[in-house]
Amino acid sequence: MSSQKIDEIFDEIARFLSGNWAILGIGNRLRGDDAFGSIVAEKLKEKFKNSAFDEKIFDGASAPENYFGKLIKLNCERILVIDAIIFDAPAGELRIFSPENLSSPMMMTHGPSNFYMMQMALPKSSIKILAVAPKNLALGEPISGEIKSVSLRVVESLGRILENIV
Picture (cartoon, rainbow, N blue to C red):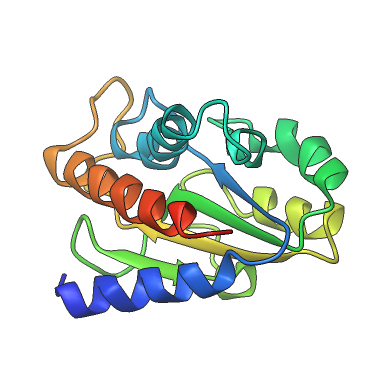
């Protein structure tokens, strides 16, 4: 993926994360690259431990619906979901989706219900999904080198964005 496209993605995220926001990582660590969102959220949470952002970053793992109540209490205007989603792109490519763009149940590694449930639970929240195209979703497999590399880049880029939020 070109650095220009990556810059555009993170510029959009920087504009999106204004006002009252939260980040929710989703991923099953037992299914290879599906761990992407969970790992990114965990690393961001570590980076911003004991900061104002500590209570705005959640690792939803394979049960993100368990965090909907916390997101409702936070009264979030904007929620950035980080997840591995199957779409037509090489492994490791990043894209931004809105829940409306995810019409096919085959796209999501967790099924579409999580995003629809989130929209129903948080009807006033704007939701964006930062997605990576996975390489391997096999049960019992580790995260691939491509996706691990992208996850580190995402943590670094999101970290810079959050450090610049006043």
